[in-house]
Length: 212
Image 1 (cartoon, one colour):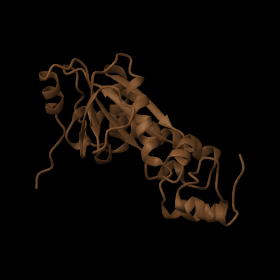
Image 2 (spheres, one colour; image 1 turned 90 degrees about the horizontal axis):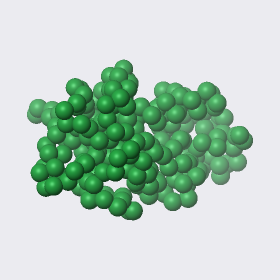
Image 3 (cartoon, one colour; image 1 turned 90 degrees about the vertical axis):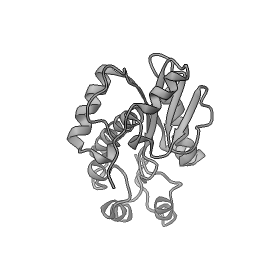
Image 4 (tube, helix red, strand yellow; image 1 turned 120 degrees about the horizontal axis):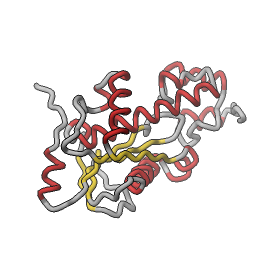
């Protein structure tokens, strides 16, 4: 089975329907035990679409970083987050949708149509939209958003890893790797851990927590 790469067809269909500014929207960070959930919205100039756009998970870190810098230069890019506190208060799905809406609202020029990765429309999104399952593998705009969101969030976790060494966030980005789970047991829970997530909740219930 041949692997398809994302293209501009979803965007072109939307423009043919009369929309004037179509953006791709994606989020990263639903699964980690720590850190925010991060979303990005990206408008691509059809005459300046970078080569190599693809689902961020299919690209090397070096390639993602290079595309990230290129996109910041030639596209309208907006990045937004929902905090650990919001995740714990609302739930991760709702928080990820809030981050997506914030990303769309943060664009330099307003969009009138959003291509959204997944199968759910974020509540509160005020513009026309279309959900696309595995959208980062089908739409270059969503692929761009997936790259931007992942690079940004990974860098946040590297910074947090320096403040809280031992959890391996610089490599696991807060996901529940074996080393991360062992560190939770041995070092306790930091303020950046999601207390509503079961592995973290269970540690708290045992009474191990790290302040600051």
